[in-house]
Each structure stands twice: as structure tokens, then as C-alpha cells.
Image (spheres, rainbow, N blue to C red):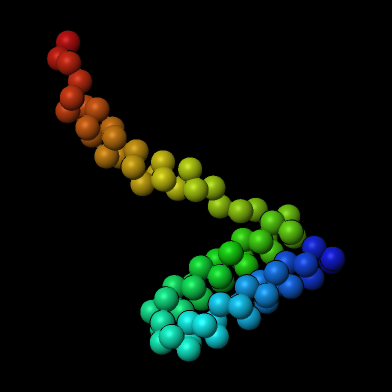
Length: 80
């Protein structure tokens, strides 16, 4: 439970320090990106704290690029 509170405190601190500056300077696109990245970071941090299964980026990249790699490998392979 203390890890959850610490994470919440860290995220709240970052938000309190960054959001007012972005609003003051009219950085609305940056604020949208900041909000999305902050939500992803919060979800990832809380999932790790609660020992929930996290997605593996390497497996996702492998699933995306393996078909292209196999096609290229077949095209570039030396004829037997």
C-alpha cells in the first residue's frame, strides 16, 4: 500500500510541476501528449506494483516484424 501512495505522490508532483507551465505557455498539443504518456506510465507503474502481468514489448515487435523478415529472408536466400 505504501508503494501505491509513493507512486501517487510522484505522479502528482510531476503533474503539479508541469501542467501549469504548459497551460501558461499555451502548449496544448504538448499537454495532450503529456497526458497520454502520464496515463501510460501510471497504468504501467500501478500494474507493476500490484504484480499484474505487463505486456512484453519485444513480443509485440516480434509479432509485427516477423512476417516482413520471413518474406525478405525468402527473397534474399541463395537458391539451392
